[in-house]
Amino acid sequence: MIEVLHYEFMRHALLAGLLAAVVCGVIGTLVIVNRLVFLSGGVAHSAYGGVGLAFFLGWPYMIGATLFAFGSAMIMAAVSIKSKQRTDTIIGVMWSVGMAAGILLLDLAPGYNVDLMSYLFGSILSVPAGDLVVMAIVTLVVLLLVAYFYSDLLLMSYDEEFAEVKGVPVRPLYFMLIGMVAVTVVMVVQVVGLILVIALLTIPPYITEKYTRSLLQMMVFSSLLGMGFILGGLWASYIYDLTSGAAIIFVAGTVFFLSLGVDKLIAMKKRRVWLRSHQSLESGRTGIVDS
Image (cartoon, rainbow, N blue to C red; front, side):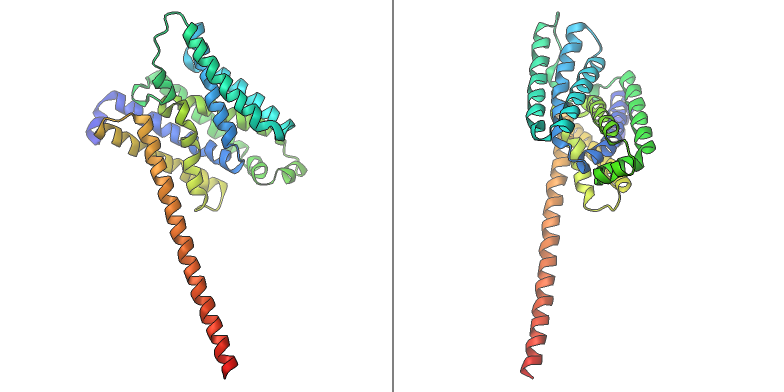
């Protein structure tokens, strides 16, 4: 695959993928431990309304998508705090209304000629240099925020009540986290698209959670695993002429199911060992009684 790096678009794709892997590894870890997967999916799909708004008003898509996704994310965050029982309903409504608004605005956009597939399933091979700069800035800002608030995020993620007792501003921190999720979603749109972004956010941290002992380790290894998925997907898309975003997620999904199989085998092996030791113990007790 080294020879393809002579092409500028492949270098851009690789850099965009690595940046996406880092930010998804960090934010995805917080999404998993805070159980925000469904909310993140709602943000991702409602962001499509921002894509339609941007084309309708003639704005760059990133501005429209960011504003719409951020606004939707704040509404979902507010509802999830005030009424947890109704959270799934509101997220479902925002999810569907955002998608519908995006489609209608694209229908009404003058001179509409946008490729819907590039936003739904990603277009990593066409990421321009300007978007790479924006992605790098977003990644840096997210990493700095997470590093600065790491201790507070750690407390909030594992024990919200204890965090409040310790004086952690849980509510503002929660809104900040949801806002970072929204910005991350928009950033990763070009890599795997709105439909598949939730997979890149959640699969790497879900796999690494079982093999790490701290939130920081989980973030680091999730980012590295995400990089592996990006590289594997890009390689497969180049060799077999496949859609790059779908190839990336297929690689991630394959590793996900393999990890489930490995976990099952390990659990079965532990159970056999336990049964053997239990049988040996019972045999020893029987021998003592008989003697």
